Image (cartoon, rainbow, N blue to C red; front, side, top):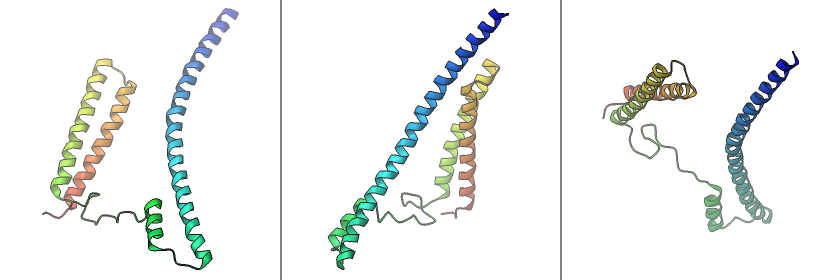
Length: 160
């Protein structure tokens, strides 16, 4: 009876070690991403705070800051940002056309078909859903949803 218990304890210790290694991997991967995002936000906040401190000095003196100081502060603090594109333009300022929407939809369709083809191939080969199959399903669903959004955009875009 005690021999079985020792074997169970060894198995539990091995499983805990495997799960701990996986947990540490995810903490490192996602923790690094979080630290980078928080660091960028902190440095951006600190830069803008220092720009406000410079403007506060001029306000306390009751003077208007020179245009060169204002220009330097706006370039350092990230303002003014580029104006948002018009409703009929993409992020680069190019006009949106049905052709551009359909071209993106076609690319998304190819990627979705490729990922679903991989899923079909691996699932029929293995007979069970492995991690790669599950990830491929979600990626294929993403491209299928993106294709649907592009097709809706093409439908509502005026013909040019």
